[in-house]
Image: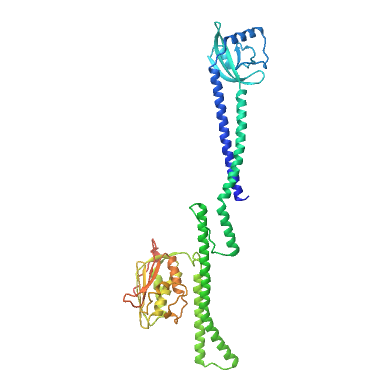
Amino acid sequence: MPLRSRLALLVATAVAVAVAAVSVACWLLTRAQLGEELDNTLRNTSAPPTLVQAALATCRSQDRVPENQRSGYAYIQVVLPDGTRCTAPESPPVQVKPQDLAVARGHRPDTLHSSVTDGGVEVRVRTQRQEIAGTVVAVSLSRPLTEIDSSLNRLALLLLGLAGAGVVAGGAAGLWVARAGLRPVDQLTSTVEHVARTEDLTVRIPAEGEDEIARLSRSFNAMTAALASSRDRQGQLIADAGHELRTPLTSLRTNIELLARSEETGRAIPPADRKALMASVKAQMTELASLIGDLQELSRPDAARPGPLEVVGMHDIARHALERARLRGPELTITAELAPWYVRAEPAALERAIVNVLDNAVKFSPPGGTVTVSLDRGVLTVGDQGPGIPADELPHVFERFWRSPSARSLPGSGLGLSIVARTVQHAGGTIALGPGPDGRGTVATVRLPGAPTPPPELTGPTDAG
């Protein structure tokens, strides 16, 4: 069943239940009120003595008046202590109840209860002691309940008609409300179907107000904007990757073609040139492998991290990264002061990030230069004596595939700092690059929040090498 039909049905059902509850309550209250008025009428009314004497006379003659011969506003009969009934003219006999006998025998002054006539008509009876010609007798006044029943039946028919009209009106109103209320949902549905059919992520839904539909529309707009941005970044990544892969692949193909031509023509390449050619092929293959690994790292969604976060010693990871950096720059002087600091991060990713920062410092440092590394209360600084980064290039250093013009001749893919920034952000930290204290070189600053309680097994000595 469509949503608008379900809403209309729910509204009609709610209206029907409400109208039924009100109608039943009204009918019950009316019946109680009419019954109370009838009882008050019987309490405030006394039988005329003449009719009572006529009832006694009828009782003596043993005559009975047929029930269809009735007149007046009430039935009158006299109840004797032995249970004998003496009915007034044109009053049908009413069955005597124990309460009536109690009044006739003087056990109680009066009583008010329900009974029936001999013909089966329900009546409301009030029996009280009354003095007639010096004699106290029990006189019963009764009124038929058909007076109330007829009024209640007419009221029930009226309420039933009103309930039916209310249900129909409620269903129509519910259908109208459902159509009006779901019109933005229809628009959203049409937009979603259009996006699914055409893959056009530029479509936006007008969102006005602060209701649920407007919030849903804004959420959909934000989702399509995020998807469009993701698709643009994906396309840009593919384009940048293709551009970066083209250079080593072209050089690798050229070198391989030279080797193949040498084999085909039988003209041997001089040993020194062949050795240099093979070294170039090996370097280009290494560069391709590194570039592909960096692309895989960046293409992984944020939720798909390589491993769970752990409490690790940042000083230990930095010490291991320093050992690798010293192997890559044996002609450099690398000094380090590492104070113990524990963080919550993925160990392998954090080590790779620190290695990338150190690699940049080693790569841009001049021969015989010095790289200074310090770790103090979660702040890791790596300074070099290289050419530095111009101020207008600093905003771009963490962009994928961006490389400074001065670094284009050096090996690298331009992805290292992007991976570092991503890893540091996953660990809840920040990274920044800036000039050295004297305006020379570059200082990389990595800040990571400390872990709440470092485990005892991660304690280690301070490295000041």
